[in-house]
Image 1 (cartoon, rainbow, N blue to C red):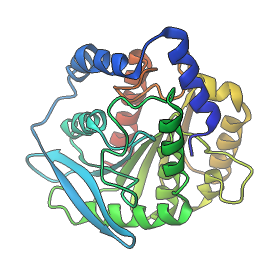
Image 2 (image 1 turned 180 degrees about the vertical axis):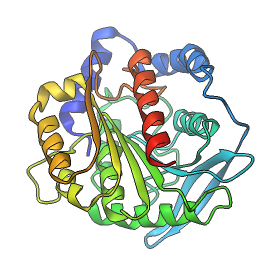
Image 3 (image 1 turned 120 degrees about the horizontal axis):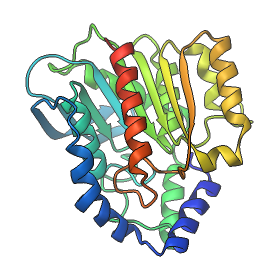
Image 4 (image 1 turned 90 degrees about the vertical axis):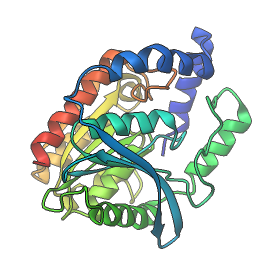
Length: 291
């Protein structure tokens, strides 16, 4: 779901800058994480725990975090190809501090429990790239339907989730197509969906995510990396036309100066300024669509 061109861009950036994923990860968590997460989102006290969720295909491991008091709109987060890891738990916690009950999942649970990649996994290693690409290839529209329904059902059974409010979903990289499938497969529950540098939202295949737009009832945020747009400039226009034809509100923007993968806190191409902008747009979407 993240195409090889995107992988090549991430690798090229690393080789050009000389910054390893380990070095950049340390920078993100040692500096960026502290500064970014200290930006107050009217932080609520939260409670988080590792959870297991039964699906038709097995048992998925995930992390669930929510405000310690009250009922709140639920949010489902789909990680990028590196999978469920501390950076995404931190991001889920930050979102919970803004007043949401957040589930971030291991989308590769059919293969192994998280972590599904080595710490600071690096695409410059051919074996790592082969393994992660192979894992990504095991997911398809059928597995997405199974998972979306099971994960949303889990959220709806939690005391901290307000079932009177719609559910939101957010996805990064390969999670982009998954938020669109989630919105289409469970349209009565999903009220907002946000894609960050999503790969393969528009393809020439019959299962292309953009063809599902008429089935959705959610409002969308599509945050596009600049280099992704350069490789597929027509995709944003296809998306705009598709959302307009379906009468579905959608904010579609190319984020200047960003490379594929710029949003997760531990990404070597992390762009703090633009990631914060995208985060703010997601909060605005959720406040508007999940109220």
